[in-house]
Amino acid sequence: MIRVTRLNGTEYYINPHQIESIETHPDTTLIMLSGKKVIVREKPEQILQRIIEYRKLIGGFKNEE
Image (cartoon, rainbow, N blue to C red; front, top):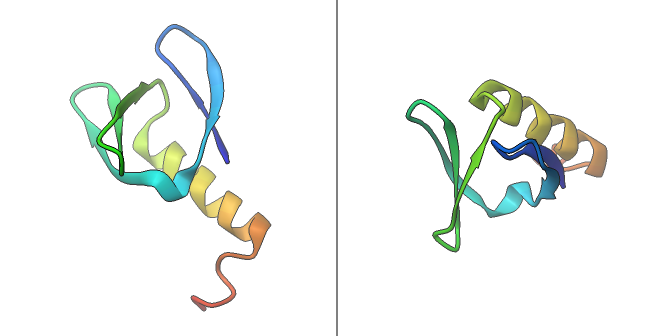
């Protein structure tokens, strides 16, 4: 799970495997596989870095190297 922050300041964790795409217009919007959209304060680059760190933590890159 990765930490994200809603626009109102509420922090929570989201499953990065459920993120289908990330859009910016101008806020960062996570589009989930379910179709749900989550608007967050983080920039896309921050989200990507958190996903990379999470995958390293769980060993998700072992099969991808």
